[in-house]
Image 1 (tube, rainbow, N blue to C red):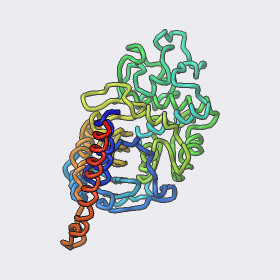
Image 2 (image 1 turned 30 degrees about the vertical axis):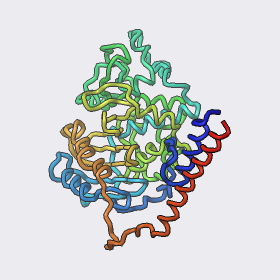
Image 3 (image 1 turned 180 degrees about the horizontal axis):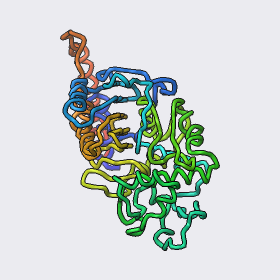
Length: 406
């Protein structure tokens, strides 16, 4: 062994011991979040500052929602680190016990139930053909494009139907058979080609859940989703044939909407129980279809590109937003029917106030003291210097011995 190879490791080791160098640090793999409690019975509260959020920015956000946006909010909840840090009810007829139709947020619940049904073995996978579940509804005129349509296409709103969201849902609900109405729409492109929002596709999925499980979608949800989360006050309407409405009609309270978002934030886990498969949560929040310049679409979840948020969104500005990077769930129940909210106003609230309230948080010194940690005493300095000098002397002595031996 050469002199340099002998001395270098010893020298670096002595530097570390003496405090003149620091050992290399390796980044740890992200760990599953450890929760202090689960809000099965009730949410616990905290302050924004205790959860490292800027309350001033949150108050500015409230002012924007109530006075500057077209939202006309009824309620909002923000959950940070598992604690409710903001809960506001703007309308005197609304409180934490008031349930509301969550409208198309219902489709995100349907997505969760499809994932559970696959995990439970009721549905094999998302590649199964939709028409195979409804043989009695198949028309002779259905072409190859219809037979190509799979569960995956329903989940991603890429079924290929001709659909006008402003009118077809009303016509569907006036018909005697909602699922048949959807399947009878003309196909204008092959399934999977491009995104076209169609709220009725989640109703077809509700029908698939009922065909495969043998119970109503509501009953399946109560056993496998709502009951484990402690959601007991839930209503869910049906179509004229008694099939649970997959488009709208699921009624939840604002705190229970937050529970659903929190379940996704925790990768489908709730109190050490895997409610939704974590793989399903992960694939649901990934982009499967391009929507426009600011949004993509997952498995019945809207994804804000570049923001790190995925959202269940319903008419009248109902939204459940999950922001994993900041351990956040945001729920807003509003009454805006203009559509402007769905395009950009909630994203504006997220990017201008809610997320910056975390990123721009500055801890406030509440000790009212200028006492600082005292510098090391002369004795401490001398001791540290002695250790360093001793180490260096040892290196030099070793080098001399080795040289003489040569």
